[in-house]
Length: 274
Image 1 (cartoon, rainbow, N blue to C red):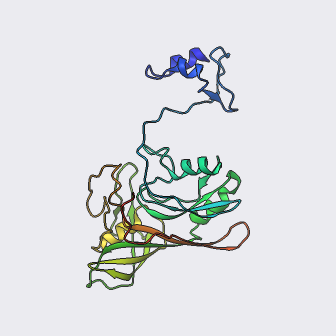
Image 2: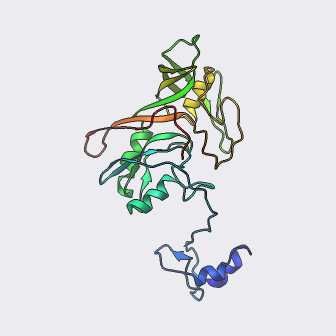
Image 3: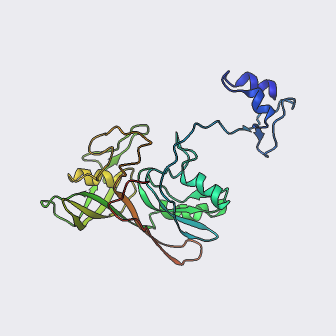
């Protein structure tokens, strides 16, 4: 197995050192020993070396925790799951370590720059029940956003259109004339000078739906780096959080039927994280 790993891995991977340090393991978790007989059709696993990550500021309060779920109030800039350059600085990695829950998995996702209520499942056996809630739209979600006020807009209103997102591209787009696949109820809840707090109830869950719908009305969310125009920002700049908050979640628990309601303690405008 040692000869095979050395022949298959690129030169910059220290296969000899990784074998010595028992960093290759089989499915069972048993370390791969260089002298093991070659085993075809066998999975070998290892953790890649990670770059240093800038710690994401801000607390990650736990709103609720029981045998099946953990509900947190996610700060902006903290990824939900390990992805790309954000591995350790993610909700899942932080909580798996701090709570001792190696199977902890999100029941749904929030964008890295979006704040608010996030539900996670404690063990693999509960994933299907809770993830299905979100996939089947059996969860009532309420978001709030800070955006400019336009007194010519008729509110409340429901925005309906077709949103398309190409994998690998930063932005989604509205496709005119296509069947409706995105729907959001929008109302102005309060005013803060020239800005307002908008209450947003998504009836569907398209990528960037709320950001696109407000931008399409001419009132883009404050400090949105993508809409209406792309603004280049340093990923480690935490001074201008997107003013979008996942405020409330309501659902009937899929296991015991108990009504669940969770609300973020955060308020708009969201301050720069310290």
